Length: 113
Image (tube, rainbow, N blue to C red; front, side):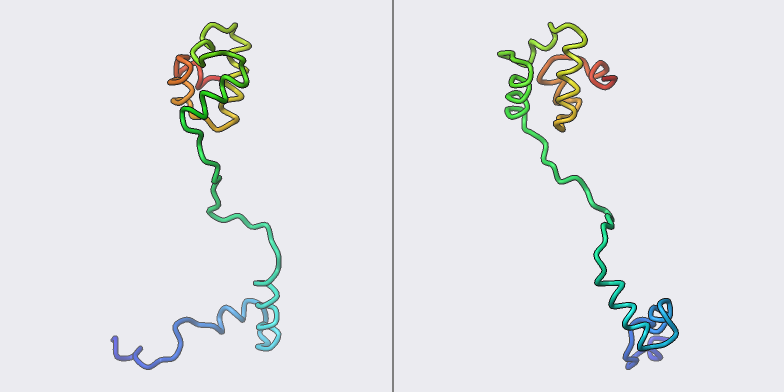
């Protein structure tokens, strides 16, 4: 079984791939090159490379958007103002657990905002 493949020069069926573009070999090579060199906006397995803020940076961010000395003061805000600060934190990329840890607002409340 293995012996029948030894010495064969090809690894894959190139003709099959080229025939998807054209049955004319010269034309199919030309079309294949054009296809592979064409600009596109394909996104495959791309991921957001934003890095999360550490707790010190997140704490500074919360203080800057809410004008408080300590992020735990958020607990005393009226509901609408508190929720607005939490929305901004989520938009900035802070995790629910991080917001909970820094502000003292419960996980359930943060999750529903």
